[in-house]
Amino acid sequence: MSWLRHNIRLQLGLLLLLPFVVAALIPGVIAPYSPTDLVDAPFLHPSSDFWLGTDELGRDVFSRLVFAARTDLKISLGATLTAAVIGVSIGLLTGYRGGASSAVALRVTDVMLAFPSILLALFLVAVMGPSDGIVILALMVLYIPGFLRFARAMAISLRERAFVEASVISGAGSRHVIWKHLLPNAIGPLLVGIALTAAYTLLAAATLSYLGLGTPPPAPSWGSMLQASFNYVFQDWRYGIWPGLCIVTVALGYMLVSEGIEIAVQRSGSAGAGAGAVEPTRVTVATPTGGATS
Image (cartoon, rainbow, N blue to C red; front, side):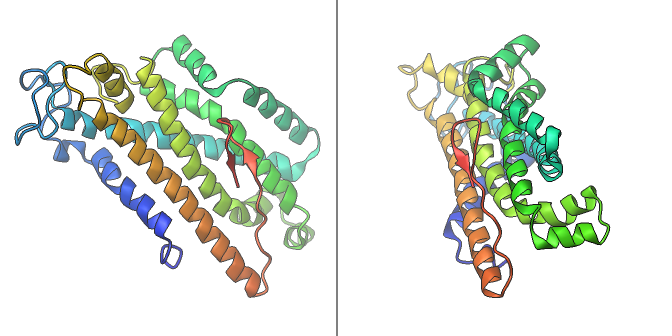
């Protein structure tokens, strides 16, 4: 656990995410009501019975926030991890082998990254219909190119290293080299990219839900709750604060975890270099949202 010790950003990020992860795992235990039940009159003020009041239909706001955590975390983590697995697998393979396959993969990612990300997601969801699975698929397609470019760049930078060449000379195949040498050296920056992309995915999912193309009602999601509250600002100004606060808190948690992992990777690399090991290569690649991961 040395990677967690004295890493304030990572500790704070995990602390912010922990209650939402618990809520996503056991929402029925935490929430006092079903998210779709009409439990009382609309827009009741917070009380001992309804901790955050009720919404425009008389549903418990706190219960809907808790159940929405499962939806939004499932989408953000599901789309990000699936994109990472597919993109990194293709990127490491094409980057290590080089040649025509590497050039084709690069051109394909250039074409995909040329499209505005949110517009492409809107198109895919509008064509196939709103649902959690379709949103995950749409966002997964958006983020595969970023992971592919990152993994390809890492493979190209590592394939000429002495330990890779020694493994090849000893008779190791491509799968062995990728699994035993390239992936372990890329895992630190990869975890940074996954945490950062999860924040982007959460915001994209909330945007789709806000536009009515995310989780279909009456199932709760933070984006759809935020959109619904927009029409009732004068009836209850508190209604829109809670889902917005959840989105900001989880996105901030993801960002802090990303920064904390980067700090841990840098410390590990410095310690390894001080012991005579080769310091891991750091590669910066653009993400589909216009940011960068390193």
